[in-house]
Length: 117
Image 1 (spheres, rainbow, N blue to C red):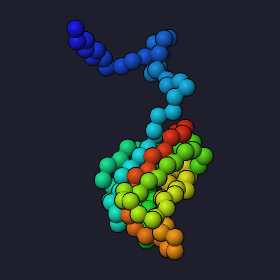
Image 2 (cartoon, one colour):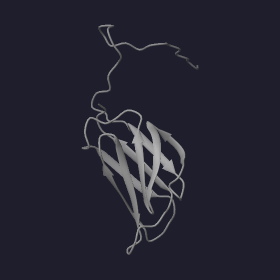
Image 3 (tube, rainbow, N blue to C red):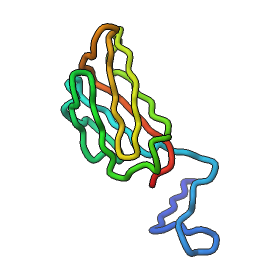
């Protein structure tokens, strides 16, 4: 037997607010960018992308994090000798792609989890 649940709002036990996630930390932002770092292919909670420099992309949040202390994981979209890493701030993240001797452009996939402001 198939069941369907259609609701407009799920409230807390007291009926005064939304249900809070407890002991969980879902992704609060993520983005997939093109290899030039000039466009967002798909995203959640990302307001804009800036091609900061060769091999450097800055994603600005729609809703900021509480601080720059949160987890941010970055991967490149191709198999290569490039290393990818991130720097975090409350309002954005910067992702880097470094091939061992210089920064180089490549598509990035980045995801962040932490507390929003």
